[in-house]
Image 1 (cartoon, one colour):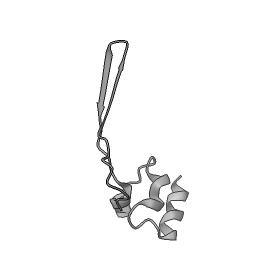
Image 2 (cartoon, rainbow, N blue to C red):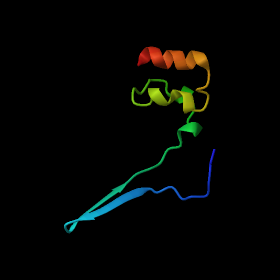
Image 3 (cartoon, one colour):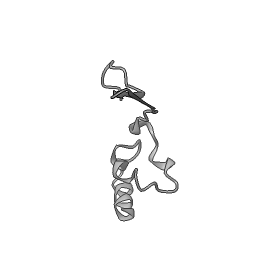
Image 4 (cartoon, one colour):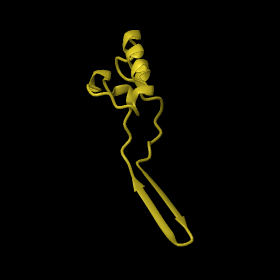
Length: 68
C-alpha cells in the first residue's frame, strides 16, 4: 500500500552546539505485517491491530481491545 514515490528516511541526524547525534532506524510498514504474527501479544502494537494485515476482522479487534 505505497501511496507515493517519496523516499522514507531511515535515520535522524542533528547537530546542536557542536554535538552531533545520529540514530539509524528501520521502518516497518504495519499494513504488511500479518496480525497472526502476534502470537504473543505485544501491548505496544495492540492499538494498531486494525491496520495490520488481516486485522479488519471484528473478532480480532475485540480480542485486542480485551487485552488492552
